[in-house]
Amino acid sequence: MKITVDLSGLDEFPDEVEEYVNSSMIKAAHDAVNTQKEHNLSSKKTYKNHTWNLRNAPGAAVVRDGQIIDLYVPADSSHSQAKDKTENLIVYGKKPDDGVILADGMEYASFVSSKGFDVIDTGQIVLENELRQSLDK
Image (cartoon, rainbow, N blue to C red; front, side, top):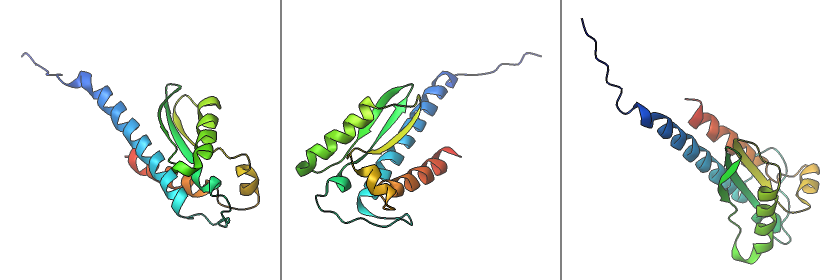
């Protein structure tokens, strides 16, 4: 008895998986940043915006094989300095081989966060939940 196996299409499978993982990570990163800019889902306090720089600075990057494949810092046009600081922090800072970086590049972001305010905590919650839902299947 002769058995024939058709494995056509199997060569594309790793590329399809890679594309799914990348797009899932990018969507989760964008959603995390957008939610952080608009809502406070964490149990931490909401800070007062005097300059709106801190609220405009959240950003994210998706890193695959040590390279940034998506950089997202959607600051409005009147806060370009906040955007630049976050982009610089992400691009020139330490990066994982694979993962998502969530950051706020304003110098005082860690100080505000240390006082119990939600600077990127909501974004972290959204990012973890979305990645878990899309990649733990």
